[in-house]
Image (cartoon, rainbow over all chains, first blue to last red):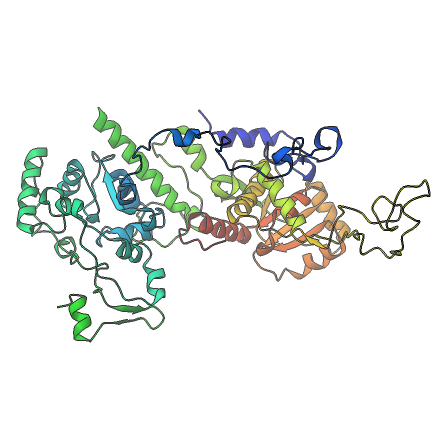
Length: 294
Length: 286
């Protein structure tokens, strides 16, 4: 029988002298002797050279070649980072991981799963300030995915959508702008700021197509067209589309956010007081119009 | 073929996740239905029943076992077994973590009062010792200079200096589990039912423990800080037998004492606290 490394290590330790203060040592390379500025090799000029601008600490700027056109100015620039600040990143999560989270009780399949729920597991670090606009679902574990969930992410390829819908689940791709995402990622910290819930902005031009596409289950797409695409996908991948109307979890599965909504059950413009356990909604007509509250 | 492998790995992972869940003390979103023995219901260990795990997975997840002994005279009663969670009691022997913890425990309280006066702090005259020129002697401004005997120290210690620093939470946590694991692996860990003893004389008590070869120094740990009267009075006289509540458990004390004796309540509390901190996802900035 193969034993693990831990077992081997502990059985080794068993036969060694008792662990005591005189047996301990730090990890290799952690403690280095200090370099002395004394003696034959550390002393005299103390690493500063002989005379000149260097010993006198009057250094020239980095890359300067005494007036000759420096190397870094001899060639034209390449647009390596053009549009870099506009690029959106979606953190990948595999279907396998989602299944594991559901199995270990970190995600509740009986409630809709969106960015907030995934971030609440505290297993993922999503930073909107680093151009991370949400999550994308990858296909690893698609073969053995069997959870029925209402999933809202930012991107999912076709076979992932098929894997989710095959089990009777719903998958939606939705866009969150940076301010809304900051609220969604850490709701507790956001509510403590005492700022009203923002209204979610529409996607930028290059993302509008994606989020209006029924094939990608975009949140701005026509629901009828989405239903059509669900059927087409089931035909393509060869599975029978489960009947949603017969499902006991039908209400939960069909629950969707308004395009301007950040949290389920909370409208934009609301304040949430965690201490008083109250939600304050705007009464002013102008505010209501701004936040598009009907 | 690929599907079979996936399904097999999936079932293994499901079972592994169930095992992991059973070792965790954490509020669950939904009920997990697993069969746990009556004996193991009180402990946090898992019995590696007929799960289809790889043998290395089995050995990692299998609980360790220890006899539940007694501090009273040995009798021929049947002994029970205490299951010990492997995450806490079979941690990889990280000697470097033990080193860090011991050094931290000794050093964070340390204040160095060493202070060498600088030349303007030396109480000597500022008078020029002799004229600049004409003496045939080296030129000097005052007798406080570092060159002079009795003068200042040029780059000496400028105390008082604190060596206070914080060790990261996980290093401290894993240091504790390493120490517990090493004590168990080296047969220096004993589990007792409770700290009740049947002798009043310190020498007699020492003889009882010596006969069992329970090391020169013993640390008794219980979940409470109100220890039983008899053992309190007896160990009060013996400097190398010490009583400690669970909240005082630390790496230094565990290494200082050759033998560690935990009560069943202490084991339960230690496991619960360690597993809670190892598995929580809402860790504040510690």
